[in-house]
Amino acid sequence: MKLNNIETVNKVGQEVILKGWVNTVRKMGKIVFVDLRDRSGFVQVVLVPSEITNGNEIELSSIKPEYVLEITGIVNKRGEKQINKELPTGEVEVLAKSVKILNTAETPPFEIVNEERQANEELRLKYRYLDLRHERMQKNIKVRHAVIRVMREFFYDQDFLEIETPFLSKSTPEGARDFLVPSRNYPGKFYALPQSPQQYKQMLMVAGLEKYFQIVRCFRDEDQRGDRQAEFTQLDVEMSFVDQEEILHLVEKLIIEVMNRVKPAVGTQHVVSSQYIAPFPRMTYEAAMKKYKSDKPDLRKDKNNPDEFAFVWVTDFPMFEYKEGDKRWGATHHPFTAINPEDFKLLEKVKTHHNASLEKIRAWQYDLVLNGSEIAGGSIRTHDPKILHKVFEILGHSDKEIQAKFGHLLEAFKYGVPPHGGIAFGLDRLVAILCGETSIREVMAFPKTSDNRDPLMDSPSEVEKEQLEELGITIKNKM
Image (cartoon, rainbow, N blue to C red; front, side, top):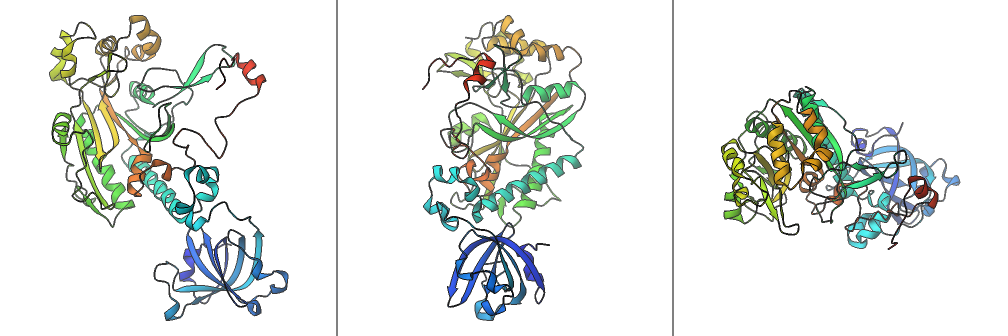
């Protein structure tokens, strides 16, 4: 059976079987040195023709980078002067006794070991399967896996249920454009890919499931930036019978668990051991804007130190914000956010969606900020259908529109909805910060470009005319 390269350090004097890719080749006369790469790391293999039993079957000098090899050999300790202290396997090397070329490889469009410096984003994403061979990218994917694993284990221990929600849903206004999916069986009607599972998770609370979480894909058709993608991953959490303090306390426990398990060796501000939880700093939205001119303040002492992590809660956001482009009021977070009870009197005074007192109404909303980036946002939810209806009216929806777009939720709220609240983490964004990356594309296996294309699969792409006809769709203007 194949041995992981990293395990060779424990096999000195033993015969092992290694399988992997050639990272680099160095030739010294008839002797060939190969750095063999697998998922666990690198190990040096020494190919000496006289030592190889199948030497007549293979021309060692023909071996090139990215060839896939099977090596049977003896693990030896390196001499003192040959030890590579920068490599986890740097104290050993494998003397090959048998070499098999499992597959050859053409010269890649960029050197795997230097992909950062040689290849632009378009090229890297077109050959993403090669880009992912790079040591940095493999490390990022492993960190992502570790974070998700810790999160899942944490919520299992906290008695949460992991529940999947649909990808084919209904188009509802939630702040960004929906991706629409035409229905073949119902011509002229469309599903929408969910921008978040917001309404589903609230209905799970109506269903009495009380504690829910999900690692979920979300879809938003919006302009792209370094920390956004058309499809991204959230950690989604919802709970019944909780208040804001309980949610913030739970999230702090989660963060400390993640940091202790994934980044245990770094100097992390405001994160201590698992045995003791010190509350993260908090500031209101108003205070953050006044002091930092941002609702995402960066509290690091040394902003040039990538291994410093400073968390802060921002609370008491305004419930409504005026959208200049649309000339109307919108929800700062989303319309299901609960209004601070102290401001109910202000809500009662609102007669139209043009009322100036809207800007004074506060929401039970909270964001978790890390190093100047929002990594999580949530709120206590409105569980009174009358207040929810009033919020929809303020946002400019008529009774007919409210029923068409949100009737299913208001109907559910007639049957004993519990007080509830939750939070959602931008998982890609959190992992990117932990990996020291500036773009979430660097921690996603198959991301889109900054202008929302996939060079690997060449999408979006045209489809067959017959498919469009079956869906009853006609392309009006072809760009």
